[in-house]
Image (tube, rainbow, N blue to C red):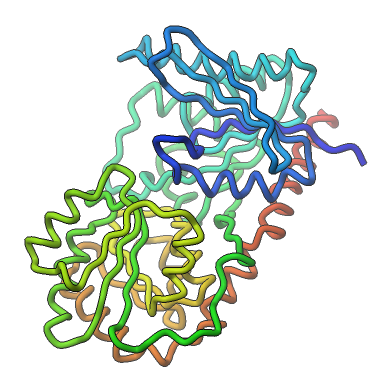
Length: 383
């Protein structure tokens, strides 16, 4: 059977200055690529004076097309950025690659390029959305951005979202369309429990993120942790910090936690997995979330989870998986961390891993996406 030809417009994609951006999109590409002809386009604002398209042949079985766009301020900069997406798509088509599907990953200006291509060539569009901002109590997209998002969601053959809560939040904003809940992919053959028992003392907590305080509330984690080490032998490891870790290190010093907290900065997946396997529990205290990959990866390793009670996460962090605390409730987080130390032995690592294995493993995710491609392509031929 002839393989479908797919163009991905990857709003988030790993790049030299941001190596962990969109890593989940890249993992999905690696899972899907063996079953279709895949070209991935991503745009990057740079100091270049004109658009520069770089085509790379990736070893993973797909082709990357990176377009460097002249970085300018205001509406002119946005026009140049949009033009970059369009030029990259046209360059792929001019080489003879006629896509059956355009798959947009995360709503952005690239959505305009997807819509224009759809209207000109009658190629169906599929959207995968990951942005956690829909869960904010107050959100303003602006008139033009909201119009664009409405058009993309209404046009898309299917809109993949990571949680039902994201679907409801988007619909509440007037983004009406065909939705399907699709959790993020986890490499369950890589992120898995180890047979080596973890030393019980000190109790090892782990947090992995970009360490952005406004989003992840790292300061709240540190303040709660500072209150449990007076009576418990515990250690906290922080991994990440895309925009630096100076603010975190300052607060650690202010709270006299230098002996109890280790900050490791951004690390490759191998080190993240190793640290998960050396930890007892994974802790998050976010103000908003979609469905964080690192939480799912921690579950795949079998770690019990402490998380903020955010709609969407509540479905995953069940009592057999971990504990939920209210957003911003540092006293509640302190209590949860104490209870985790006391009751850690009651958690079953295999049970924690079970749902991730069932819904997030690469084969399941790839099949979900490929089915959507075939349905969209078939529906287009019939129309």
